[in-house]
Amino acid sequence: MNVKQILPPTYVLIALIGMLILHFIFPIYKLLSLPWKLIGLLPLSIGIALNIIADGALHRANTIVKPFQESTVLITKSVYSISRHPMYLGFGLILAGVAGLLGTLSPWFIIPVFAILMDVVFIRVEEHMLEEKFGPAWIEYKKKVRRWV
Image (cartoon, rainbow, N blue to C red; front, side, top):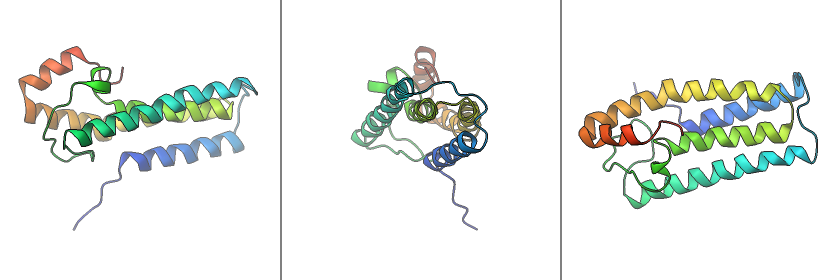
C-alpha cells in the first residue's frame, strides 16, 4: 500500500483555514485595527521571501525539496546560514503575518501548534536523515546554526 505523505504546504493551508475560522467564529480579542493590521505584511513578505530563496538554493544545488527524500548536498549558505530550516521558518512567518492582518488574538493560537507539528512530523526526521548522510559536516553545521532562528 502506497500512502502519500502530507507535505508542509498542506499544513500551512490547513493552518490558514483554521486561523480564518478562529478569527471569524471565535475572535476572542481585537488586538489591532487599521492601519496597524498592515504591520502583518512585514512577516508575511519575509516569510514568502525566505521560502523562495530557500527553494531556489535547493534547486541550484540540485538537491531535493520534498521532506523524507535523501538530500544530495548539505546547503549551509544563503538563508541556510541563518536557520537550518528556513522554509519552515518562512511558513511560520507567513502565518504570523496573516494573524497580524486579521487583527484578533485567536488566530495566533494556531502558530505554536503549527511549529510543534513541523518539528515533530518533519524537522526531527529530516535532521536525523541529514546527520546519517553528512555526519561530521552536519554536526558542525548544527553547532553553528539554530534550528529555527
